[in-house]
Image (cartoon, rainbow, N blue to C red; front, top):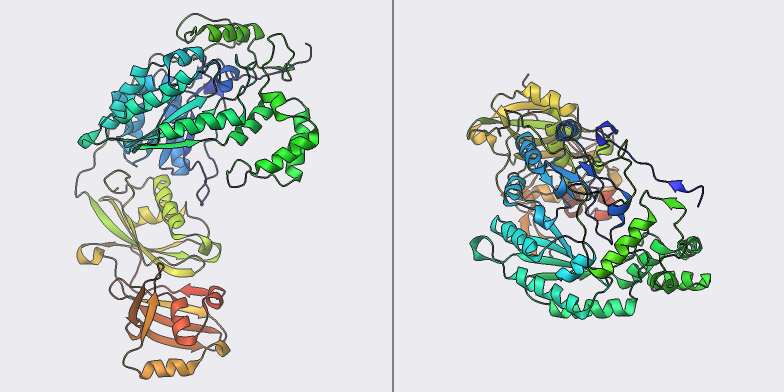
Length: 615
């Protein structure tokens, strides 16, 4: 075939561009961390894996370049998590020495390093110890099949003992949960292979960790979907009825304490199979489905199988035509016009080897299997077998007591009023990391900067005087903190003062909070206020979020209320015994202003006079 679309290949990742200054959102995106690709491509040769075929050969970033990118990326983003990405991160040749240096680099700011794609055999106790130094991230193991026979068919070069040893090591080092991924409907699968999944999970469930307690296993089942450009591109996909039958069988067998079982919707798998191996006619089906209202179908609550089936019926084609039908090895395929770099002969040879249950080795460590991707001039496997660690590769341990506490005041006005408290706390934590200011961190499973906020305002309210305390290194000055933070905070949040505090002064004071509420005077019933002033007590029933009532005396909280002819009401509210009232609640009790009306009023928390700046 002429005029084929040829895949482009980056031969050297060290020369490839990398986004060192990504946009860091103030909200919470799905992947809220620094993501760094340390290797591209995989030559393990799993016969079901499209990415493992089309992204060949393996090209590693050099350890020194990875460290440079991590250091610069953290300085620009302030992230508290790093994810080392690749198709198989555990196969990175110098992973252990790289992790040792990353722990040195990340320890001071308690940045966690996660490895999202680790083969069971690559998770050594030494590597696990390194990962848990900051905090334990999750572990995912993908046996894919329960029996060794079927793992040989799919070329998943992983033994049951390697899986068991990895789980034993993880539980013994304190991990509580391990995810396990399996596929059903793989070529040559028999009932014995389903039983082997049950047997393997049952064996892993018996493993005890710290304190002689058993960990939890999250077992995920996904139907096998044949993919283009793989040795299994000619195979058939099982139908939805058979898929549901297998899922129900496993669900019943694995319905035991300590095992959480979940699966992919078989209807979704059918669609994936149709799109994976369909021809140009599938484009019309996708467009028709969109016109019928199929949007964001990746979310299970938005997925509507009936609409998709209606779109398929309108096309006059059966989805099973693309999924359940096995292809002939010499049959023209809809994707033959695309050249992934892998030659068809290699895929056919691997298809035959799968039927014989014959695995092959990883070519990066041994002989070339003639897949066709490498020309050994510009394109070939690129790995780093040796890495000399710097001599100063020791983690800095902070001494107990070598810190002080600083009190800050800051504004939260204009558009910044729409940031929630957790978002603001995250902004300060990341701004501190970007500024390089030495901060004291909490201990335990999830170390966080020692930051505390005094009576943070709710979403939508403005403030001219929010208060917080930060524990910092003993040599950090107020000027260091002010200059460091202000460069990295969004518009509307401005640090207005800083002062050192110690002893009893270090505790967050309750105090009196002053609020200015912009409201027309005709909406205020001042007769209620006059009656309130004359009373010795003003009890009322406050209902909490869970519907539990509590009796409070409003006289203990509301100290003063005055109205300015320019159009605002100023209220002074005291905090008592850990209870804080919001202006909206006071308006409701004193002036019969509904919660809906109060939500539309501009409310500003005023600055307190007891905060001052120290240069």
